[in-house]
Length: 422
Image (cartoon, rainbow, N blue to C red; front, top):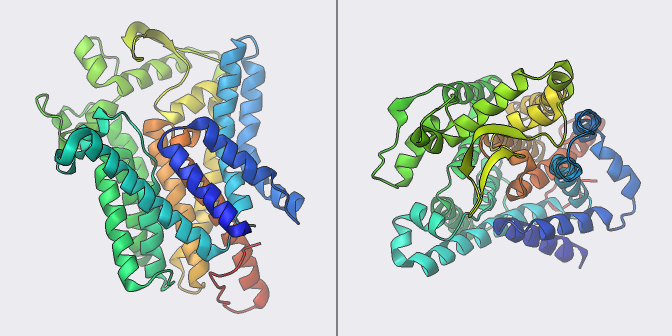
């Protein structure tokens, strides 16, 4: 009964995040965190590593105390989101067996795949099956990376010979989630999918630098004004949008209305960087919650509203830099780089049991997915990406607990997927 309750709550969280219902997503996370547990206090202490992420936020709060109170609270709320979702994932690990959690992730991917397909067909007809990108924007931007996470769970369990479904259902769920990724027509979800696909083969290379270098290369390329990737202005195809991604993100002080609109994210990032560099030492180190970025011109960013000053950026790293200074960047790099190194070593080593390597892979995949997409859609501070952070929290507890069992046994132990991790 308890497992059904929490697996249902996880499904509700994914569906609510699909429709970007922030209140429901936060409410479900709060229920998971607040529900009594036999070792509740001990489980809560496991968030202490991620609590480091709050330190620069508190410092940024003091640095920006003179700013608008509403904007300060809004920033504080956004910066709490990753800690809340990761904690919810940690506590889910105390309540859901490993196999049940993985199956629920896969069912969530199937459900969201069916949702995005049925909504697209309802609004755009059968033509949406051949042009999902147009349908995606015609119905409004909704979605959550349920299909990429589900596909990753399926492929990784197959890689480590962990059987969750029969061959028929495995193939069926792989097909549905792959089609769901296609129907989402999201460049962000393609990045997440590629992060996990790379993991499937990266451990064979025995090179710890593969994923970090890939991340750095993508960031460096996006900083350049690569007009060779300019999309065809007369086309709205998904391929053109992918080719235009680098051009759209390239940072520059654009002056014409056309350039600002087509490269808005790059223009927004330039104005944020420029404002940061013009600040004083306090701004550089601590930032300041509640700060607004001056775009130096009015832009139509809302349905009927023009903005000159914006409180939130698409680029999550610059958002973090403006609001919490270099302290915020250092805190995030410290926490997640440490996790990546630790988990990657275990994932790349065949000496560890499959269950440990599975959760190491999920942890690394979630971290790199969040790192890359944070550059585009403030992923760490976006309810849409909550399932990534919940999965990260669940994997974090499983990895560490199963690793401690393995080391205390003195020999490779084979944890069952039909067990609780804590």
